[in-house]
Length: 201
Image 1 (cartoon, rainbow, N blue to C red):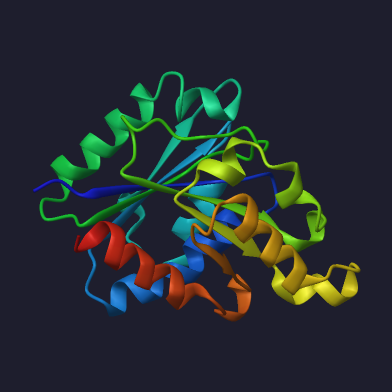
Image 2 (cartoon, rainbow, N blue to C red):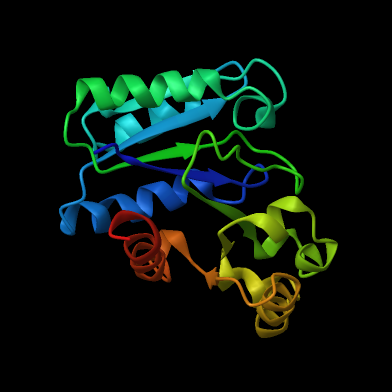
């Protein structure tokens, strides 16, 4: 049995790495054996952050350097990420889940179905409540849309309930979850969805 592969994409600063940091304790508590692949252009910055966090052994966090547009290695030619995921499965038999974090990208970012079984797109409230209305493949096609930094809404003039309603509308009712990753709010709902749709389907 191969590990489920879940992609996490979204713009720079939306909170993709913070989401991983927030969900790892939930995965560990649920007994879900997990590893992570991060993507950056020419650094291992996100991987090093996760390794320093100590929630996973460092060898369970691999870094892929895209060297070009972030979506190239998750969509057009995902072979580097596929190879990294295959390596993790060889090194850690019994692995249940591999999280693959894209480098920060725009609303057109999507994951190849050859790479992942499920993918989520992360946006943040501070980016503006018009983001769902702008649509784009990331908003429309992701299996889950995460609206992060929900606590910032009153500080940036965003009507959060309206933003979530509009997100639900443009996605045709497909899942939308509001989160505050640094306060662990909404993260349990993401785990519940992953368990239902990916891990124990």
